[in-house]
Image (tube, rainbow, N blue to C red; front, side):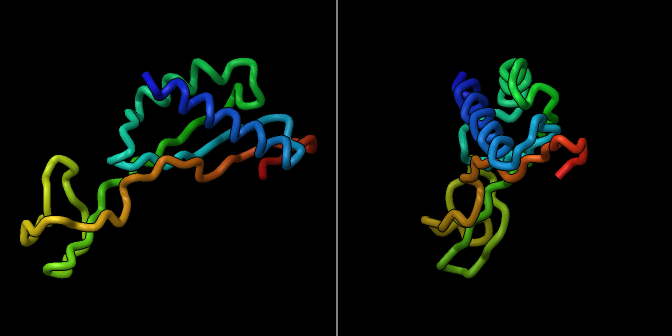
Length: 120
């Protein structure tokens, strides 16, 4: 399960963000996971929950934003969502299409609690 190594990397990024902001606690984090990222959101959430114990993110609520595959077709000009299992343009079936989004796997935001107990 490669989601465990991804959760570990997320926790490292979260800890670095907390350190940069002088935070003692991370209360929330938002992650974007694209349809083509080869990451199973539920497995990532589980791995994160298990691995966060004993870290600055021990009480962190992880929010996973699932991002759909969006393609653009040079042949017909269509731009929109696409089923990742279907090749070609959903309108004209032309191949290839350009991927506009859906490959994401990134930490979007981190919500921390500083020494004054206020969220930032």
